[in-house]
Length: 384
Image (cartoon, rainbow, N blue to C red; front, side):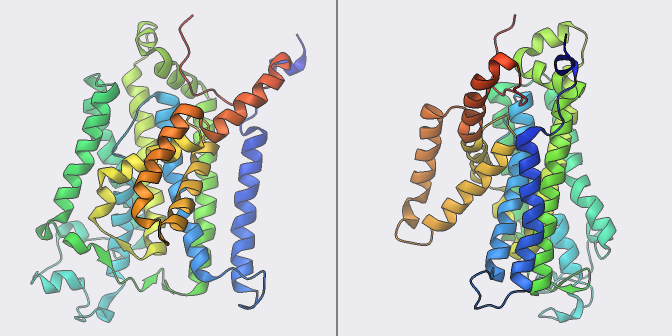
């Protein structure tokens, strides 16, 4: 057997290296072209474009988190927007505490909406959010704990398939209703907004916007590396086996529910980080982020890009959201949801493996004789 036959598969692969290189290049070039070129220059990238691209990258990280559990474990979560929103609220609470006396009512401690609602003191769950390290921990911890509790009950009860999808959707809908209530202490229908500073820097400044974009690109790159490492490891092989034949995995002695739970918590944490990066770039977080329709839209992103490819999930998020931005700004705006639904149907019928998945299939056919394919296949295979 040759050395090429026995060597372990590359962690990133060619497509992964290209993906990381593009993200690193974007993290450097976009801020440079925004900050160091004249506004009239053909190379200048306007600040609003920087923020828009940064938002796309946070969506890409969110799609990556969904692909980790859907593409490699077979868990179709229709409530992942809840984890994204919880991470966003954790960051929003920190940003609200930074406003201080610059708010409309000038209260040094209570956010404006609490003063308006005649709250007398800061609720206990807002304590600590005046410190960035605490808020950063809560960005990961809040969605992680929810995923841990939810997943522990769901997976140990062996809830799978469409039933699991329904209860994840019920979870995010319940949170939507809860966060709409003014007495919850999260701003009710209006949510959290009117942010001023982040770590002492003006959140509206060009430099801050460029930095947030670069951080979003780097977070997506690191998230991709983490997911790729997980699915390439022994842990990832068990996940794929669970996806393809969970009963057989249980018969071999593996605690499938533990593996699913770990993947689910990691996915939720990544979604929370995406939400935390999203909020300062769009300037608001409200209960609409818990909408079940948002979670369903994430599934469309992943399906369009390619389930079980990681790169495809991120690409699908960027492409679909670019299309959304383009088509909702003109006369086609009322028809966007119909177009999105049609896109999902078209992909399901004609590109069931998505854009990147179809490309991988074509590439692997050419390399099959040499055994050089390096991307995990997302579609379930019949047991041997």
